[in-house]
Length: 215
Image (cartoon, rainbow, N blue to C red; front, side, top):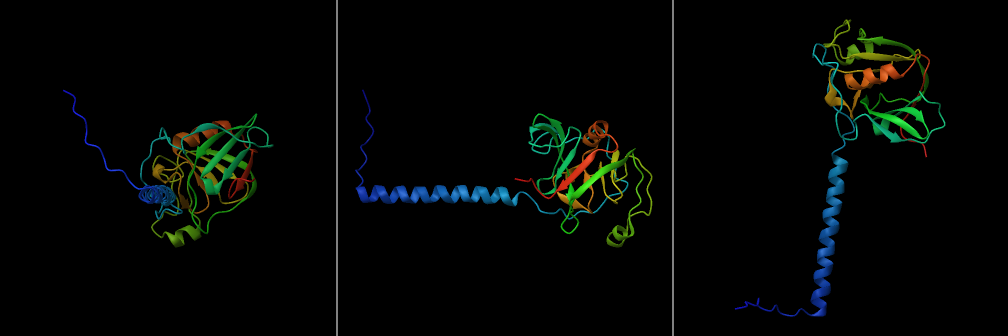
């Protein structure tokens, strides 16, 4: 015996049009809400201070997601070995040639501490010492006046010093801050990533710091 489902009443053309408009409106609202959720998920700044003494290993890297180290398409006229930093995107690129670059996720300066310019790597250091400048100590009085290099040092496993400025590209003992605006103007990478970068970049390499990608 075949069981036939009961027939549904026929809807008028007006009712069908009204129902279609309602469903379309709900779909637009859902898409808009999802987009707003994505925008709110990207913080502008991260309210966290340095944590001297917190131990981080040299092996820590960003393993997945957009801030993981990866080879990407990157159009540039700069020679291989040039570093290009896009502060607003939280990315550091090492130009490879043939419109390719190795991209690293970074932490950048928080609002009021971001900058742009052209410098060169003036020196490199493994497990660098840290001497916070007076301005930083004024903002964070608990910081030590000097801290020897090591796993508990906020400078991390490696540092590339940028020209004659006080800024550096360095590691961190706070890998969760990668992708955020948190520093006083330096650029930080997870320790494993900054070790990789350290081996690729020579003293004298050009470093271009931009707020965002140029069009």
